[in-house]
Image 1 (cartoon, rainbow, N blue to C red):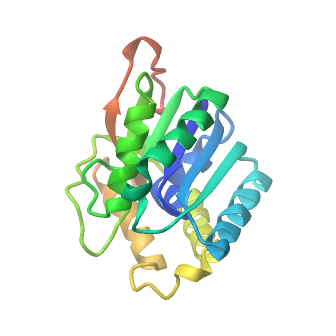
Image 2: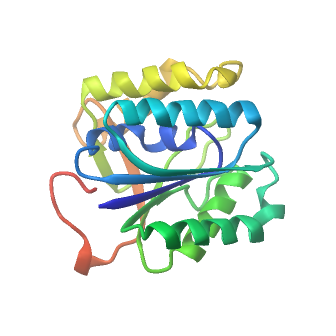
Length: 210
């Protein structure tokens, strides 16, 4: 399956669904599209992608735009056009993106753009923890093994050193998020998602939703 994963910033994809990506890496091809970056953050993101490819994740294409953080609404038309071209080139079967009611304005914009461009896709929203919270109430879960959980957290802390000055960007929070979602399905760890649109005629039911 071809999976398009859309993020507002470098590290959003890995925070939201790296465990799921690692857990399903033998079955899927991934296409990463990130909407904002600085030269340093783009370098970190590309290094992260390269490391994941070396671990066997089939990332077939990466696009990292250079729009300014916290100003994506003013760039909506350009981002939408760029995402449309990226998706048309790769023809994704499945899309993962931000949550509609995320309190970060960039995340909300990316949700809008994704759903406007990907009008006939299976779409699920992932979650990004933050100090101002949000109303994320998931109903789809991917169980994450202890090994994958440790790999996800180590990866986040290794490849995004520029974020270490933020008080929320820490090992404890990433494990807490995995633990909370795991409890909700009687597993030790899990990642959680909200379905936005699901086409039942081509949705593959299995032990893993991807």
